Picture 1 (tube, rainbow, N blue to C red):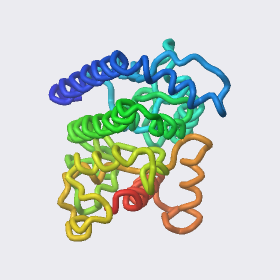
Picture 2: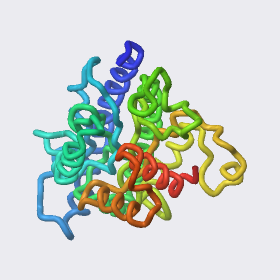
Picture 3: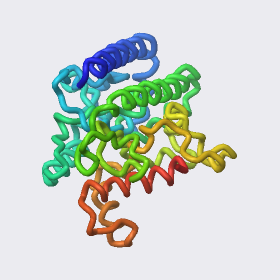
Picture 4: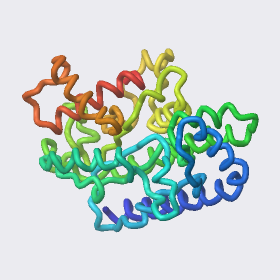
Length: 292
C-alpha cells in the first residue's frame, strides 16, 4: 500500500473496531437473547459469544500486504462469532472460497493473504435468514442497529475501496493505466483492488440487505435502480464503480456453479481467460442488482 492507503486503512480498521465495541456495549444485553431464540428452531444449541463481530484478521494486514480484493459476505455466523475466532469466512464457505483461488493460481490471489473480508452487517446470527427474526422483534433499537450497521458498513467500505483502488492495475491493463478509470474496456481488467459482493439474493426484492445496497450505490454516486435518474444518467458515478462486482455466494459452491451455468448458456465467452470471465459475470449481476 502507499502511505496514503495505509493510513486510510489503519483509520478504517480503528473506527470499525471501535464501532463494533460500542454496538456490543450498548446492545449485547438485548441482542444476544434474540440471536439465541432465532436459532432455536432450526439450529443445534450453541454459545453466542459475540453479538456484533469485528474481523480480527484485519489486524494482521500490514503496509506491505498486497490487497487485491475486498470480499463482502452477508453477516457473521456461528464460527465467526466465537471468541477464539472473531474472523469472517472461517467456516465451510470460506474454505470453498480459498479452494477456488488455490485451484486457479492464474488469478494471483491467496484468499487469506490478498483479501480484506467484510460483511454487509457485523451483527451475528447462526444463519443469515435469522436476521428476519431480529427485524420482527418488538425492539426498535435492534431493528435500527441492523439497519444502521448496514449503512455504516456500506459507507465505510466504499470509501476504503475507492482509496485502495487507486493502486496501479495489473494483468491486461498493466502498463501505467488504472483499470478503475479505463473507460475503453469498461474496467474489465483487474485494478489495484476489486470489491466483490458475494451473495446477492438478499440485495433485491424485499431482501434483508436493501439498506446496504442503497447506501453502497449512494456512496459511489450511483442512482438507485428503477429511479428516473438511473434511466437518464450515463455513467456519472465515480470510476471505481466499474470495479464493484456481484456474485453468488461461495457457500454450497454457488459461485462456481453460477459461473459454469453462465458459460454454458453462452452469456460468457468460454474462450476468455478466467479473470475476464469473472469480470463479465460480476458486471452482469451488478447490472441485475443495481441497474448499472
